Image 1 (tube, rainbow, N blue to C red):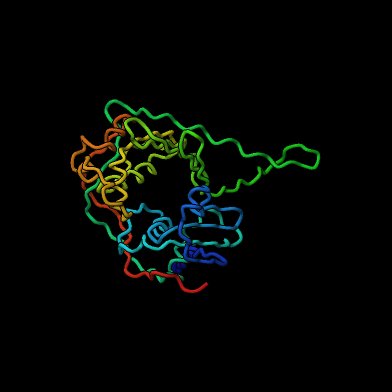
Image 2: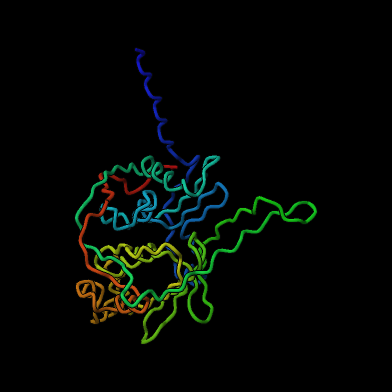
Length: 308
C-alpha cells in the first residue's frame, strides 16, 4: 500500500505594503483655510497614488482594519494628532488593498501592536420602524466615459475615474461638501426651529449608522438589512450637536451650551432627543440591545511615526 502524498502547503497570504510613503504632521485648519473651502482632508486614490489628509490614528486604525471607530479600544490620545500621508501603491494593487497597506504602515511607522477580542457591550440597533421605510434610493452612478480611438469612436476599456479632493463650498443655501473619497454630496443647512439639517445624496445605511454613533452614548449597529444607497435628510438640534462636540473633546466656549436634552439623556430615553425624532421621520428607529462586539484592542502604538 502506497503512502499518501502530503497535500501541498497553502501559500501564505500576501502582505501588502506601499512602495513608498511619506507621513507628516498635518497643518492645522486655520480660519483662512476654512473660509476658502480648501481642505487637505479625506482620502483620494488616483492611479497608484494614495493621498490621505488630516487623519488621526483614531481614523487610520479603523480604516486599516475595516472596522467602525467604536470597535477600536485604545488610549484617548489617538485622536489628538493628525497626519498627512502621501503614498505610492505597488504595481497591480487597487483601492481595495489600501487598508491592508495601512496595516503594514501602522506596524512599521507607528509600531502598532494589537489583539482582537469580543466584549459584551450595550448598543443601539438601527432598525426599520413598523410604519415602514421613508427613504428614497439614490440615483445610480453614471456610466464611466469610454476612451476614444484615433478616429473619435469610443472604445473599451472605460476611462479610469480619479477621486476628487475634498471641496467645501457655500451656495447661498448652505454648505456643500463633496470629494475626498466620499460618494455623492453632503449639504448642511439650517432647518426648522434652528436645527442643523444634513442632506446626503448617496449613503449606505451601514455608514449612516456609524455616523449616528457620534450623536448618542453608545455604538449604533445597522440591523435594517438594507443593502442599497439612499438619499438621507437628517436634522438635529444645535444643543445635541454641541453636546456631541463636547463629548468628542472639542472646546466649547463658556455659556455656549444649552440646557436642552442632549445625546446622553436621549440615549437613556429612546423616545426623546432630536436624533430619535429625526429617525422616526425617516422610518427608522433605535432599539436598546446588548451583545458581543468584536474589538481591535491596542496594546502598543507610538504617538509619532518614525522618520520618512
